[in-house]
Length: 279
Image 1 (cartoon, rainbow, N blue to C red):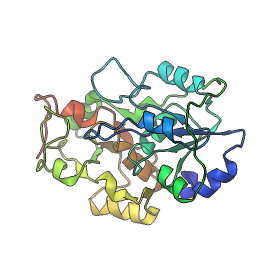
Image 2: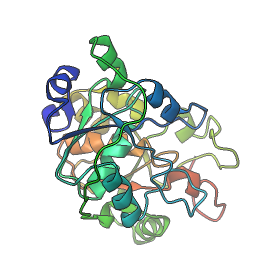
Image 3: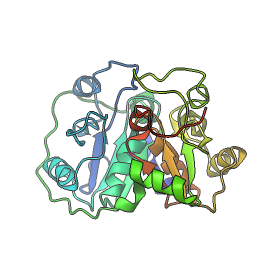
Image 4: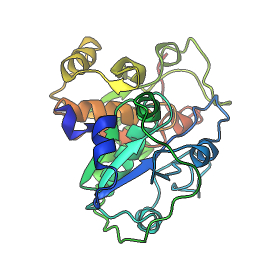
C-alpha cells in the first residue's frame, strides 16, 4: 500500500535521472517559524529538485495563508517548472512531513496522475549519504493539463450548509489537542479558541513517526480511536489548511479517498465571531 504513495531514498537515487521523474521541495514554515525554506533549498537540495512555494503558488487575493490557487495560476506555475500531469512527481520537505502532503494534495486536486512523497524527506536522503547540490534549477517548460476536482475543496459556505442540514459529514481537526480543546492560544494572532461544532480531533503528528507515515493498520486504528466512522463522509481542517492534508493523505492510504479539506481552516473560521464553535 505504501508504495502507491511514497518512495525511499534508495529508490529515488536509482531513478533520479529517469526522463519521467521530477523532484520538488515543498517545504513551508510552521506559523511560529520565520524560516526561509526557499533560501535553504537554494543552498542545499536533492540534485535537480525545484522549489514549489506553497505560499506563492497560491491565491494571493486573500490575506489567508497558502490558499489553493486558481487553476490557471497553478497550471502556469508548474508548466513553467517543466511539470506535466503525466510526470512522476516526487515531493519532499525539509521537515517532519509537515508540508509535503499539502503539495501532494494540491497536485492531486489539479489532476496530477503520478505523485509520490520521499519518505523521511531531505533528512533521510542526507542520512543515506546521497548527493546534494546548490543553486537554481531550470527545466524546459511543459504543459500541465488541469483536471480540477473542486468537490474535495471545502469552503465556509459548504461547512455551514452541512451544519444547518445536519448532513452526515464528520469534521476532523488536525491541530494539536490543546489548541483543539481551547486550552492553548492559536499561533496566529486574533483568532478565537475552539473548534468546529461536532468536530473530532486527530492531531497530524499522531500519523507521523520520524518523518514517515505510520502503517495503514496504525493509521486506521488512530482514526477509529478518536471516534471517526470511516464509512461516512469526512472533511479535514487544521490551522490554515496545511496539516489537514496530512490527514487527507492518511485517509487516502486506508481507503477513504473522498475526504474533503477545508482550505481556509481555522485561519478563517476562528477570525469570524459570527460563526459557531465549540470548546
